[in-house]
Image (tube, rainbow, N blue to C red):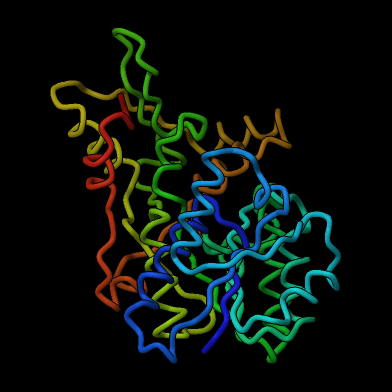
Length: 314
């Protein structure tokens, strides 16, 4: 029986926990892993009814909790926690700030963990490189370098593209939903060009793929998932289909414009992201090369995502 520690229970952590629990229940009892979730002590003791209900639901899945604060713990302190687990899956996101992902990887290696799934649920950092958009993904590249420089701990990086919902967030700028203003058109913008493509996957689908990898496959190295890979032209067409008899306004934010915008606000992370996606390297791949396609795992494409969310563009 293996022991699995999931770091965090947020937008991605929860789907991974649920998928691991669901898939492990199909295994013979001796092969079912134990599931532990690392949470801040303040989260575990939170008086919030919604948080209490969330923790109760996790307990019902058979998970236990480990109280620790990643942001204030040293590498050695984290390693003392991590050494008790065979597999660690990081679902912390970028909320911990600069240096967090490297600290976690260093602690995993110091602890001698058998298999690590780092927080690399995103684009292909190998292709994008450490210097793109002012070093936006430098730490992610350094984590890969650290893991590749050793052989004691197996590791799997799951490249997912962006979360599907992110493509439709107003702050990202690709789909401007007009926010209910009467008479205002919905605007769809292309980053770089209308032919540029972007790969997207929902957290729920990522959870299913990760569970499959952890419990059935144990594939190592860099692997890929894709709920869908679409061009910005296709996004505009799909949004137009969704809203029926209205046309969307189409606007191109070319690379020159986006670089100029970033130059005026060089610390703005969203503007850095826009430049990376406008450059079009390492942000998309075809579904044929993905774990979900090779293992016949059904995923949600952009058309289905829009169909299931009535308010996403209205």
